[in-house]
Image (cartoon, rainbow, N blue to C red; front, top):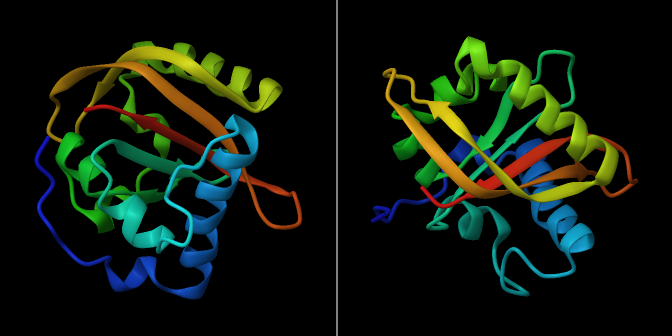
Length: 154
C-alpha cells in the first residue's frame, strides 16, 4: 500500500495523545520483545506513516478508537476525526462482533496474540479480510491498562 507522505495531525501531537501513542509502541516492545519503531524515532511520526495498519482503542465499556494511522484511514475508508469518534466494535459487521469480542478477551488474558484473522468493514461498507494481525494490550507508564492496539498488513 502506498501511504502518502503527510505530517502527523496536530490532535495526535497533543500531550495526552502523544503519551497514548508512546504507550502503543512501548507496550508492543514490552510484550513482544521487539521494537515497533526504531530506537530514538519520533513515535507519532513512525506510527502515523507506517505501511501497516495500526489502530488502538481505549478501555471504556464500549471502546472508541484513539489512534489510527494513515494506512488505517485508507483501509477503513474514513478520515481521522470520524475514526477517532467510532466505537471499535463498528469495525466489524454485527454478525462478526461476537468473534471480535472473543479475540479481545484472548488478548486481555494473554497480553497479546499474533495470529488473528477476520473480516472487517470500512466506513463505506467494503468488506476486507485481515490475516496474521497482532493485537496487544496497551498500558501506560504506571502499568495501568489503557486499551488495546492492533497491527496488520492492509
